[in-house]
Amino acid sequence: MNKIKVWDLPTRLFHWLFAASFIREWFLDNHVLAGSLALGLVVFRAVLGFSGNTNARFSRFVRGWAETKGFIAGLLRLSPARYPGHNPAVAWVIIAMLLFTAVLALTGIIVYSGEEMRGPFVGVFSFEAAEKAALIHSIAVYSFLAIAFVHVWAAL
Image (cartoon, rainbow, N blue to C red; front, side):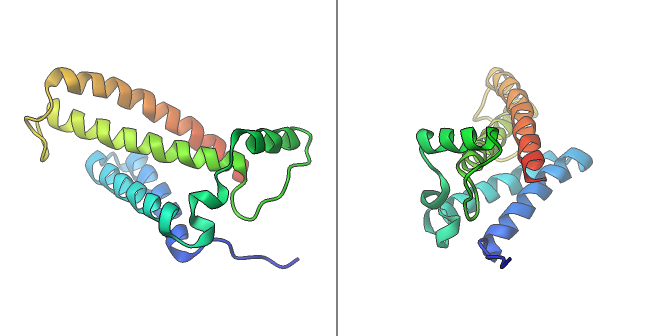
């Protein structure tokens, strides 16, 4: 069986640096560095998603609900369709992970500046806004972890 190389170096670097930013946060608890890295990587991946190589573009692998539902039905029958790169279900997982990461980073900035009174946005957000952002941040963390767990489990 011949292997086809689907992912280029920028896409692979994104993937492993993205994973590393969350692993770093989980074990070393450096919110500012890990969150900044994760937000920068989301922006980088968005650029790749619209202007990267063919296989990295969202238009290549993000499919509509009908095709995604058909893929999941095939998966449940243990006969999923084959796709080079990401299948339609994983594509939506990727979009969710990128969106949750953006929410985590933005709510983290609000908490850091409004509650902890640190960072470049001190005075922009109130303590009350930071408290609300902290709740959203917590929900987003556990949602992201659930999605990441499913993603790793499916890959294995």
